[in-house]
Figure (cartoon, rainbow over the protein chains, first blue to last red):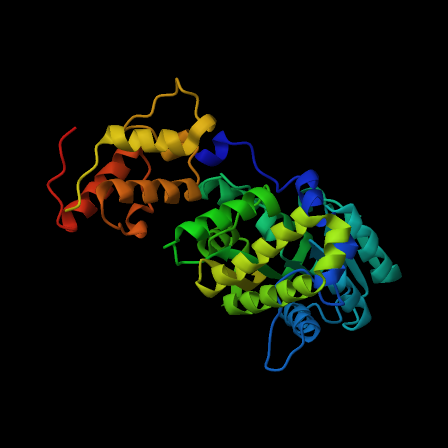
Length: 292
Length: 92
């Protein structure tokens, strides 16, 4: 019996785990994210502000998914709605559907997206579209699709379920643009790195685990062709450093909102993560995949 | 000079790492798989650190990447120790 058969299929982190992280309060995140409230790695060019780099990232993925001017686009893990807003506001998408498991995020995203957006508090595993999408974009959600402690086969199986679901929802030739953290190939961890990673897994991103690139491509086999892959680890180091600087600059207000411990936890997580990307313990992948 | 490590010592390190997560009556043997012991990749890294202290040399972490059982882990470690100029692995 294969491991995959022996283990009930894993369909992603629970709403409770997602809520614990993202429902800390919009006001808290507003203190250190950019004005678009985009909580994922930016795409930097010389001289960019954080906001410019975040918008550049959104546009890069929109272009990769060929979502510009599309009739229907799905955003898996829509966060506070920055992509939805841009899809309908700038890229002429007729209808954008956003999925999140966080109530707080959904309220904000729905308000921002307006009448051409449909925001649902729903997992991709439960989402049933009335008609196919022309493009799917998922930014910083894949990290929650496997839980810490699953082995490689179980992770691949969990990811395969996601790709199969995207395959069902996407019109033939439609593209999926995927941005996710991944494991970096530098596995020579020092003790402090191990302590910090354990802290992040146990305190910040519970019920989450990072993929290896090979697990993503294995899971996509036979349903998607890989069009492009890029690893922008240094872009995430830069993004985290920027977030940390803003959080530290707004420390007093942050402590008032979420308390000293939560602020200290976030400072530790962001500052450790800068080093993890710089030393390539972590990777930041942007993939474009085409449905076959 | 680096010293090889015995299975019993690795089993003790594994128990210490897992603490309360592993019931005291659960057997930890050469045939125990890392999966059934519930060892995550970070647990393994910490076990590796403890083993390095015991054998007295740094070990290549990539060498144990595909290890499935505790016995295989001991074999990989002792092969690295031998390569680093240690004494021949003791037979269990």
